[in-house]
Length: 477
Ligand code: GDP
Ligand code: IMO
Ligand code: MG
Image (cartoon, rainbow, N blue to C red; front, side, top):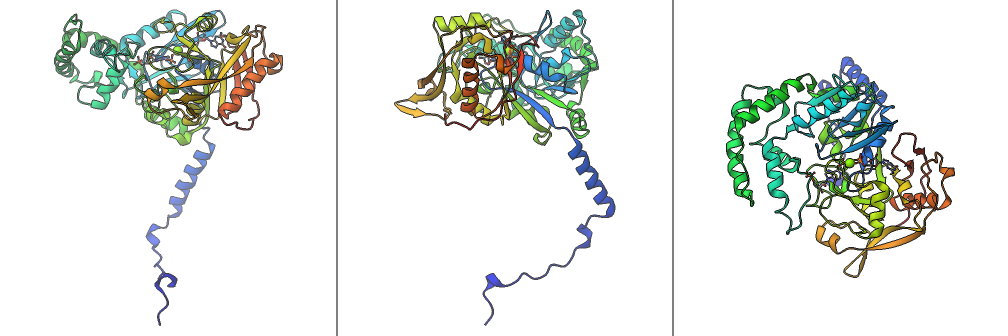
């Protein structure tokens, strides 16, 4: 009787010599492996809240250890304030690395570029004696923001999401990303240098004038003039020409050669279009998941992700914010933290730290370690509170809700800790901090499940404590 089929040994396969690599093939493979092993992968700086976590300050500090600083999503909606000595710089599209002379700054194809804004930023920096030349590279793949995007942003801002305004920065970000995905009415930076640029502007303006007039409830929209736009953007394109390049190729080569890359996130993970508090989000992937797609650099070149958080929470614009303190305490945080938008000067909404939200975004963004910023703002308070869970319809929830309606009904469950009376902005070591401040940092680290590497106690570079704490046991939120 023949043995059962399952135990039957497989017939020996003939050796196919053609698929065996030649000696040359092995050499190529070996060389690639050596290059890869030698490569120093990149570092990412990602905001874990709703933006303005002081990413700019941290990027400026970390720039010294890197060769290239990469901005890979968002646009002129971002505002990063960096203080160097007695100088204050407000950066928006240009990576914060521009303040360090040896560093190459790269704005990749995931960014939406408004040429007049980036030129104003370049001129502002040059007027202050900073060199902005070959050290700033702009991707020819970056989509361009035109006046119609700004007009659409204005017309749409107040007419969405059940009557609650999105509160966008009105910089045309959403409409430009929408056209990018829609494809037929989009122009990239590289298109501005082609013969077809003029006719494409004329074609798009015709369609946009009709669409915007139909959207505009105030009836104040003045039709756009294609020739004026073409002339203005052609002038901008000429001035930007020396900066424009294929940044994907440049970064892939740099990563493979072992150059040290620093990826500067804009906005915060809770504003991520796919994973944030939709629709009250921005239009790009502002969490850690956006780094490879926005930059064109695969994740294998990234080995360190730093999550940046404020010691409390803020939000600008519309949308639910469970720990918001719309009361004198919120005003106190706003005053002490100077919480007014860098781009729009709008007062930021302020509240207690939300560990449910940040534990979620730290996991989503693949965070290895934390930078806790603006800790000094909490000084002088009798007590500090941390939200460790939500109550939603009588149920205790520790996973961040995926639907904004559930988040709207979330009632925060707070844990209270003693505050500390003394100002801490002159302190430079963890050991100098009052015990209550150290306990607060430990508790945040425990709730988020990540160690703390940096603590910031003021806007200046030297107002930073290099903590490198050991990871504490992960506590259940
Ligand atoms: P970003 O968008 O994440 O770069 O943050 P912003 O620059 O919009 O907002 C952070 C603000 O806090 C800026 O005005 C910084 O100068 C300031 N800042 C940074 N670190 C500290 C800090 O540790 N303490 C205080 N009080 N202010 C800080
Ligand atoms: P940085 O990089 C804080 C918010 C806007 C609005 C929503 C959508 O400085 O952290 P948009 O204009 O992007 O369509 O607006 O996103 N927003 C930010 N909030 N910091 C930012 O950037 C932001 N960029 C956008 O206020 O609620
Ligand atoms: Mg900001």
